Image (cartoon, rainbow, N blue to C red; front, side, top):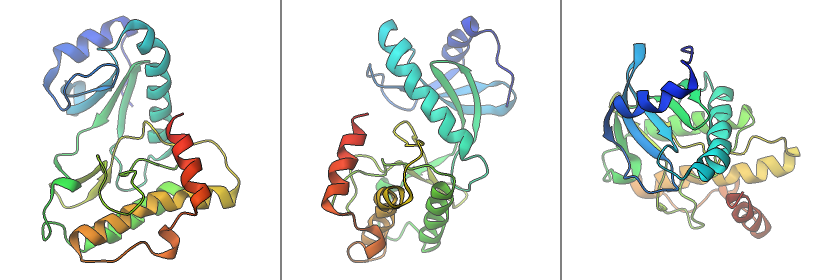
Length: 219
């Protein structure tokens, strides 16, 4: 990972290096920027530099630290952008994955191999002890507000936005039950692109797990 410069210089480096915004600035939410980043060339920054100082230094730093920890744990798992730097408590710099969000694709634009890729990514993520929990958080298997799945220009599915990821140790049965929520992403792809039906048994959550999931989403 690239060695960080002194913290005080990083916000200016991010702002001066911004090529364009990838998401409108809507404090207190994080800002996503396409930036010029040192030896990496083009990268993506996720930061809370546009939030109030109190929010940045509390919630923002907590969310950035948790997401950085998730990306570090998932290093080497296929289907995730690389963490390039965590140069400031309120900033992440990630590998840029050019492509399109999966929910923007029309039927026929996603090949069947994407399902196999997504399963490989989800299984690798769960083996690393990470739950994503935000792959379109609806209960019926359809696409939600955001899928956090990118179909890259080189034909690989990627998962992004680990701000809500759960890394804490959980009892095996509880972890496997909550992992089913991530597996609903497979249901979404089958329904949208391949005419598939509802969730398989491994992708179905009991009612108590849905209540727990909604509580965790507030943390």
